[in-house]
Length: 253
Image 1 (cartoon, one colour):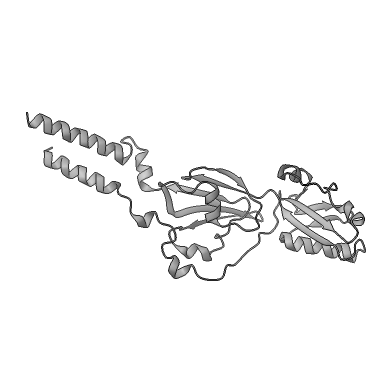
Image 2 (cartoon, one colour; image 1 turned 30 degrees about the vertical axis):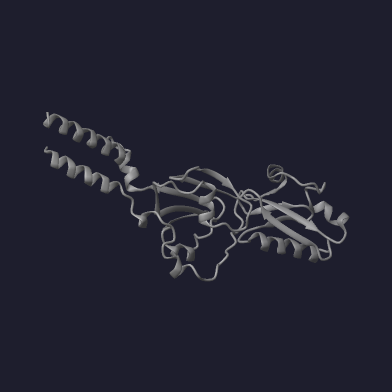
């Protein structure tokens, strides 16, 4: 191989190592598609969810029997989970006085309304205040992110972008136009692919994550190729540069 051939190959390798901003930048069409109404979609309660249910009334002595944290002191998430109501595989919780209550197809707000109505209709409390919160919501983020792992959250709604922020954002090698999300709802597993370089995904049901979502960031093509025998493009460029330098030294002697 001549010196010119080495030089051409070296230039081609350097060009191949240059990233295209279309593969890196998020929401590239945000000015066109981002404006619009946000459609909040509260998740329905699922088996193995742990719920914190708080009942209040004008007479605290009457409502205290419905609250497991009767001390009124602030508790850690771990302690609240131990004292919370675990939803069984039949979507049932066992609530004081009222007995077994179905959570099937209900959000936390709807369950709170259901419990409130049962307390009033059963003559247990007058005008009670009931709140229900999911306290073991979590998501798992794997692949080309800076901090893969499982993350807990207490917000009612968080977006995919916020979830990826928990994991320290994508690495430069993350494939931004093909994020894989698996979701299990009512015993059915769904799989979706979203493109973070376009704002179109903001209109999809996967803009907001749901508890127990699995988010996978696959590696881009350069990252996949770098795992081979030759190694990454930088290493290959170094080898070619070294060979080119040696060739020049030998031929000029």
